[in-house]
Length: 120
Image: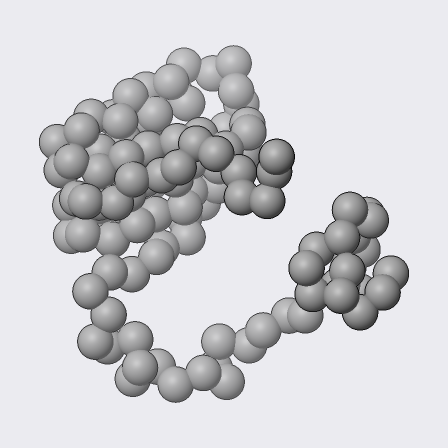
């Protein structure tokens, strides 16, 4: 893989060596204090986790939720998605499910494009 392919994301397959683990402690925490919105990462194990996600969205933050711990045929997933869809509608935000493993829920004024970047 050439240098430009690494920068621009060539079509070659990726391996774990292509990624660098970042330590959040290396970054200045004070810089995020002035941010108008935060991005939260959540792991959803059950219905109780939806409450924290809803609170974050109501507070104006974006949430990326990992739902892989839930069985897709379980009614709990359906119920959680419906609850979060209602919250997104109430605040004028947006919600999408990315594959079977992630939900992205946005606050007021943030829409999620349904088009992938870099695809023709």
